[in-house]
Image (cartoon, rainbow, N blue to C red; front, side):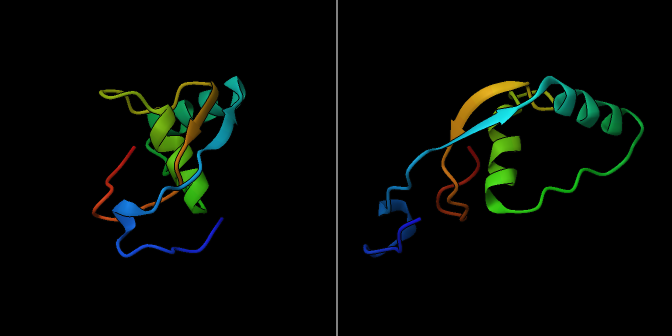
Length: 79
């Protein structure tokens, strides 16, 4: 990713990053949630992927392809 060249994170345009969540992964996350186990996401892209793939009102990501922007800061908020 490119370094910030503008003042303020809301002015910096981050390129979208494509992701894929296999059905088996979504099912494993759903099982873990049902069993009360924690889900540990390591890395900004993983966090944003899970966040972007989880529809509002749901607690597990949807399987499939998508895109997300990896910038995380209070001014930008969640995807």
